[in-house]
Image 1 (tube, rainbow, N blue to C red):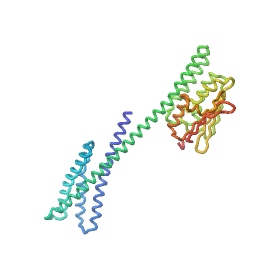
Image 2: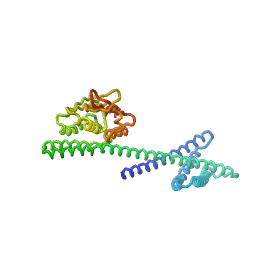
Image 3: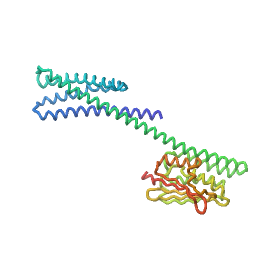
Image 4: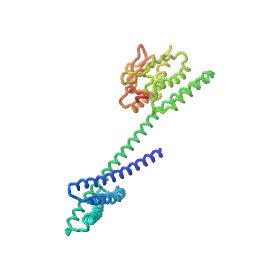
Amino acid sequence: MAVIDRFLAGSLFEHRNRSFWVLQIGGWAGYALVNYIGSLMHEMRDIYTIVLLLGAYAGFLLTIPLRYLYQRIWELHPIWLMLVVISTSYVCASVWAVIDNATYWEIYKFGFRPDSSFFYFKNNLAKFYIILSWSGLYFGIKYYQMLQSERQKALLASSRAHQAQLKMLRYQLNPHFLFNSLNAISTLIMVKENDVANKMVNRLSHFLRFSLDNDPIKKITLQKEVDALMLYLDIEKVRFDERLDIQVELSDEAKVALVPSLLLQPLIENAIKYAIAKVETVGVLQLQAWQHQNELLIRLCDNGPEAPEHPELLLKNSGVGLQNTRDRLHALYGKRFNLTMKRNQPQGLCVEIKLPYETLENP
């Protein structure tokens, strides 16, 4: 993380430095061009072009030290900062006016000097306005770059916090499932069901490998998500044997849709814990998914008994699984998702999820 921060800081510094020189060169070239176009309105000799170029070059060189001075006084009180800017701009303009007068009267007028000092004062005042304008532009652009820099840092911090939140929500689920599986394996060993326990350990290792190999920030296809879900259900089948019936119906469009990794596992876990485990006969889990317009619809239903009269209240008083699933979806999609719970017929609950339809070709 520190390496990334240093890289970003270096890139930002290089970007600002490059921008200054581009604007500096372009600005003074534009100044020379405007003056040249203005000279075309009068009958000026060709040598006047040299005078204009020397004047622009002098302004270019004299404003470079101002940049480094302004960087040093950046933190001054606004009043002191203004006084320093005005005074240094006047000094810089005076030096520039001397150089400009020398080139004009010596090169263009062949050494002629006017008797009145008004010409010198007028030129000095004009140069002062130009340098003051340069200083104003410098501070304006500098403040704009600072605002952009702060905005980029805020976006970067928000993005990192967002990623950390998603990882926390995803990985908070795994220990809950892991403890249940280890307890089941321990029970199997205690009752001398070693073959079944070994089978369960193998499937658990495959499921955990999938969980660790897939970043919770990234999305995977629904088909891959269901394949991982079947690894989890294989573990549960060891516990329930023939008392667990799994039905999966995915449309071709739904199979290639992108979803957050391990999105369905906590929902299945809740269904098994609160529904299938209480069914005296065969517990049925039915998973359906299809595309409707620009949405992916996922429905997970069980046939558990004792379904509440108002299932939507479970979302407000749910445990870790449902709450984390909703928080993950909110972090990833904002308001572009919907998670609801309804009563199944003739018994049980259905969890319905609506997500934006995304594929690898159209993420």
